Image 1: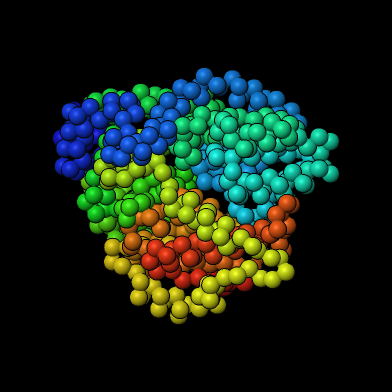
Image 2: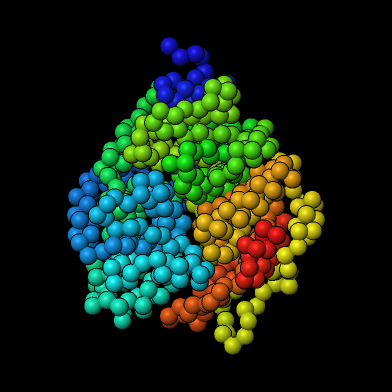
Length: 537
């Protein structure tokens, strides 16, 4: 029998009194049942907001829905593997992060295509994808919930144009995943795409991993999606339980109660095999909770030495796999919780558990976890920067955007703006590869040791669809360092008056100006063409 105040089994963790009492009260009040009944009053008293929320709760039923469509997805994978060696996902936000997580967790099965993801408008990144594949043996999946997201549109235009002279019939080299009835669905049909997958429209992008958006690419890579979905369906069943088996409810109270008590920073600790899970969880937590000057800051990829900075403001979620478990010293601390996977297929259960817990945490914090108002705001600002763009002259930008990089300037900025209860966000608008990730990790660790606060790192523009929401709409405790660079060689976007290089700079400018409008302290540096050397100097 477990000791009082613990979650038992392979996930045994000591819970605080507040979490224990909250879970007990939630069970008495039938909270799991209300959530499963899709009772939008859990998150808002406004009838208009409630109607919008009711249209975003389809993720609750999606494990079973996807299992019903299992053969459709696996048959498609079996069909294309005959003549396709690479699959490139053209997406952004939830539609790309979930794929990256699944690919990195399982890899590609022998005999199935290699899975690549493009979610950056940096021309060096677009070119890197193009050079990594043989275009004659590549399928492109345009992935967008709304079917109007700017970045996938631009990727599509670029590669559709490229494939005109490469493929015998370029239509067979493209497929789409989008909501039913979107412009992308209509375009895919009109253009004669090899396949168009119409997703249920009542699933928000960051809650869509267990739908077509995550499962079709996973099937194409040979991942056993039946095992992943069965794991998720099992967790969904347990989330209805009104007793201690409901770990999703407990995790939700762990997050929400912690945030309400001032522990508003969630440190995600994973084994190497699950490292990419943090990318997906970061978007889910930040974009769902970061609004109305509230939120939970997810921190993924930190070095162990940095995880103790500002520990009294943190929660710790430990993912453990197979025979591994939390350290005994961590298990005794109420700010730590263990989330165990018996094997990698249990990532399906974790996807659902984190979604359910995020919904519960949103209820406790007092926010709507299913909208993303400041993401739309950033998109509008980018469009404003690009409006009336004339290729004959440089893109207009603020005077304080893109300063020359100087360590002393950074130190002066951070000394003035870092709060004891805050964090530092490093936002890099350059190519994301192993070298740049390592360089920014080194820079991050230096800042953490010097300023004694958590430091996050995001690559633009992809973080605009995740932590960008929390940066502008969440708790006003961050200090923001932006890096922009000069691409080695720009790329034109067919049908657009601007290039990829112009687009990513416009996105950086829009991000910079929006942060300033919200009163967030932000400084911007232009590091030219030798960014890694500059940062590491």
